[in-house]
Image 1 (cartoon, rainbow, N blue to C red):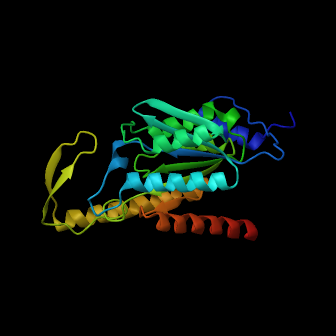
Image 2 (cartoon, rainbow, N blue to C red):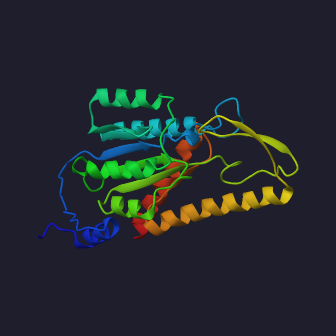
Image 3 (tube, one colour):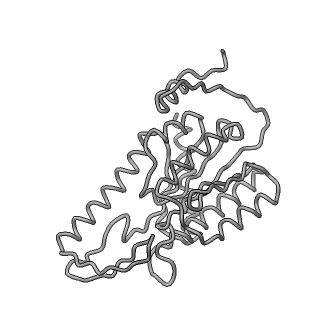
Length: 260
């Protein structure tokens, strides 16, 4: 009974609608564990070269490789999860080279066919493997978060006391904001079907879309703050830019811990 975390148990039970108990486990001298979760919705394959905007696929791959290298430098156990269509690909956290090789191969996979609820599925899948993911496990979730999981899914995952880090990958022109394209007919391609449609927006409609996207990003970051998680916002696929963002995130965590 002394090992039950009653506060975490109450939050998890409330989120799931059934009685669940979270038990504190203590691991002495155990290597840290890191899990990379990649979003493979069709939208994550937008803006490939030669388009001048952010290639979300390249940014996700570069960020995942950076996390992999960082985990290896501290001899962490590394895991990986993604979905192709509705099929999960799961590597439990291990240190063997075959796991690293499997993750590298997976990152090169060009199939982006996951369903719109893939992040909710991913969090649920991690919960099913929680015995391999003790409290303190770093879970980096790489996505544009334009199809975010519901709050209950976040609460259920946080109740396991994982250190969840959303890595938000959004193009600064078309997703974090919207360009002034009023009065111009533009071809838009549906990411799922590949069908092209010409769309004509007025200046007022383009301006409204800009405000909508900027508000969406702001609300998303505020929602993460309310959950107590610290996101990393990526607006570039350049490895040096991504490194700067991760270092800034790490420095803020160190500063916050020192202030506390």
